[in-house]
Image 1 (cartoon, rainbow, N blue to C red):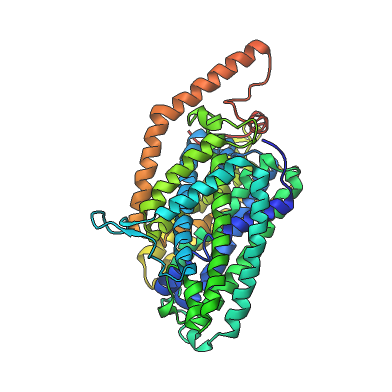
Image 2: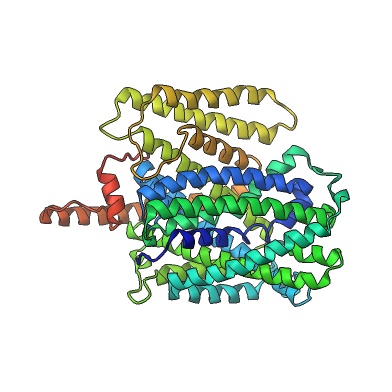
Length: 534
């Protein structure tokens, strides 16, 4: 694909994807029902976790600058099976996140037209609860975004830049005007749902930061990945976290958390404080931000699918790049059709919880993959060091799962944490002291390894412990489907493609590039990367 993007483009892409996805979609729901005014702390905790994940993504994106994002990174370090299961959840993550944003677009459009947030939806009494509010407007905006995304990546960047500028101006207005009309009495009951509510909301609000990984998928189209990607990823993450916390604080100072509207919280809050005219400006700004989120999501999900299809684990038809526009048209259109179907039927609450599970698991796997990248090279790392490394990583994962499980089943206990947390600390220190580095990054690397990746693993797993059981059931059904597809179709297609490519390259005397993947990933596989999976 064409190399047209700079660090400035990437930063605005990241901010465009994140700001709007969560703050205008989920803040009202979580503040009113889960965290209260302490929702600002939920955003802060989610932001710290997302920043740790972003650091891990950045090293991979710089060292392996291809369009596959986390799928490419996991395939190089943990093997094809783990990568495919993660890839299926990545696609699910993008589809349902865009669906959630599209439904929120309808709510803010209704507010802009002086209607109630649900007035433009159609109630279907014959369908089940949470699936009976049909949203045809969401389908319309998805079609418009699809046309824009397939036309040009640089055009999408310009649109996103202009949209984000307008969006930032409206956010500045919300913060200033909102704080002028603040009532500190609304903060007397700061954490009505206690600490558990803060972390439960944090697990769902992680959804608000999912857009940053779309920046990593654009590495193949970045002019100077080593310089531009760290600036774009980390810069957009830091700015976004600050804005989220300020907006959440402002919302809960304007209006009691008990009265916050769950569909269009900021617009209704301005109406509640007597600034009825301002709700139209806020709704317009929210629409601009949500449109940017949809555009970046459409761009990112298509590039994930393109790279997966290059491996033949998905039909290679999805990997076709249009010669005129330089964009993956087939993948873009098909995924946005799936997004439109989900957006038409599904309630926001169901979408948000399912999205958070997929996102947290993927980010956890990327952190594990970074540890593998730094400490293990097949044929170089000794058997003794390999065994020590596996044991320490297993202890990190086990202690993190134990902490999350204890948090989920124990309301007031603390003894379990006295066991799991020291195990995590000792296991991480064990890697630092007893396992030598097998590889150092050539261009840019995560600092404080193994502590930062290990902390990312622990926090992501801990947040999973705050998500409801029904969402895990839906996640399990989707993962079972992915497993069946991989065993009966994906595995064989990938193997056949790799075998055919290997035979051709053996005849020609050239280095195999595996399964149609980019030269960068093929070279990474060739230069001693491990596949830790089956």
